[in-house]
Image 1: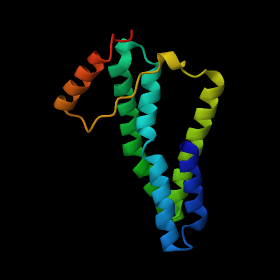
Image 2: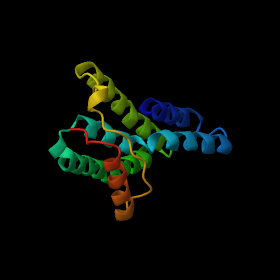
Image 3: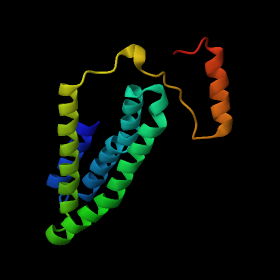
Image 4: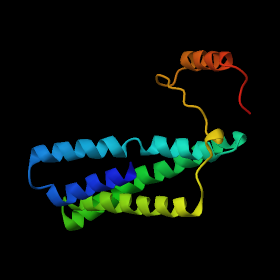
Amino acid sequence: TTCCALLASLALVFWARSDPSLNFVIVFIFGCFAMPLYSLSAAHSNDRADKGEFVLINAALMLFYSFGAIGGPFAASTAMQYFGPSALFVFTATVYAIFVVVILYRMQVRSGVPAGHRSRFIGLLRTSTVFARLAKRNDDSDGPARQ
């Protein structure tokens, strides 16, 4: 997902001025791969967390996400001020390239989570107490809870 977002960013770097309709297609592809990264990061970190660490891990993720949400636009707009509008795409490609390097490093240093330790996915509609209660009731009826 991150590699595809990086490739879409690089495509925007090279073809941003060529055709407006091509820009829409590439930006759509970029959004398809960039938007789920926070959710994937949260799922990955929750798979690695111990039972009592979920709130702490998600709070840290939200804190780092907020740093990026505040600092990213400031850094990108500064780059655009000095280098022009195409600097936005260069900035985005640089951020995703760093992200890919960090991911590749982590893959070399640490092994994957065994399948038995991963949590089961339960799809829900938005956050709602009613849906959470229904999901809990459904999860309880599936059998004994996994330790």
